[in-house]
Length: 636
Image 1 (cartoon, one colour):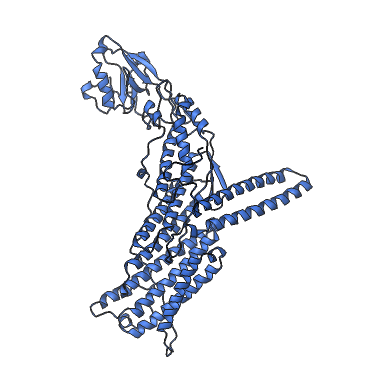
Image 2 (cartoon, rainbow, N blue to C red):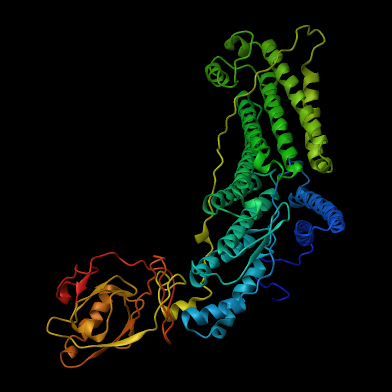
């Protein structure tokens, strides 16, 4: 493999905090892999031996290995909780987001396996395709360290799209290439490997989602442009994880299991909702009553979705897997935004002027649906028009806000990793002090009434998060192994799923009733039927053959009508002369595997993707003149 990566979107040696973090994660992954191999060997020895002293020695070794593994996993969890590295560099204080680190993978040498397959399956000298194989391997090496921007995403997309071609060309369903794809779990560092290319594709797709989370976390969300970019990035991350959950199953690593992916989708949606709240606060800077109520409901919506994420994270399937710092962060945010919903409600009631008679009906309409349950006390109209009643209810909301702020700070203090995050501490402390200050402003010494319990705010949002599935067509790629398709034919037919007989030449002489065969399909045209006793049958033409050339003219890519036109051109010549018709060999059949067909051409290469044979009856042939020939079957 090359020492440096020239691919755009690849930045493996940039001395940034993030790249150093990735290198540390890779080192820990390797150490975890080594310790797990040692543990597997020790466990096998412990089960196999009957010697008591040996068992004691092995048990001691197992204890030591398990201790090392625990320390390594704790170190990896701390790395995965280093959210500061992925945040933006703005001096403004904003709540940090939760990004994901990329899955690490080992280098992979495909030179020999692909060479051998090209030789065996396609009848070509595999060494002639060394350049293409090397180009693919360099692309894979580059995608291991994508840059944290759009170019990095395009690089991952490019590799993912190339895997589609690789799958069709080199991975038949009933045979493997003897190649193992090794990937490390993004959170635990536990190694996994599979021969299936689907594992490679799924891991790349996971990294596409993870990179979107890193791009979203780094945006400056104090600007409208930055918050819109963050929303887009987290929605695309949710789409990638959701697509992975729906299209890939039986993943060997926990980070790609259905419960974990479901949790990640919910987490991304919650972070989108948080960004929407920040966007609303940026757009609506004015302090009018309805705007403050809208902001309060947006905050309640954020609290609602983070509560759902927290429930998902504490379920049995993922509870022991998700980093404690993540679960704590989500719980802290849930309490924090619940506090904010009550704070902004208090601001609306205490700081905004009483509605005029003209605006009162609109205020009543909004406020009657604002609380989950209507607050106790006077009627709605009196509450909205009486400044003292508004102050009392606002004071109750502030009291609840302060309680929620203090609970958020208490939960935050339980996590050692979060205590190191100065920015989160600043956000929580600032919000708490702001609520205390406001409470002090509206609290009167002559207040002898007991502050009631403010009802919760009904969650509502003006912008629902959208799960944006990956747009793979956005990354335009040229098939690296296109030379195979040029010499063989369409990928829809000539693939690793089909194995072919060598091409053979068939010499036909037109009889009185024509050639005696039926054509169907396009690119290439198929011999759908051969009339028994006809010229074609006597020449050795068989049902299921593909016409790959007529009189030396390549027909692999020709449409039905184009092949018919070629035959028509030689109609008169066929009266006394024979035309040389090269016919690709019929598909090999295997009764045990209906989908297993194959083809091998001699010197002219075959191509890719499965062609399923029609179940049309052999008797359904027609005697039509050439002028009537279209895309339907016809006998010639």
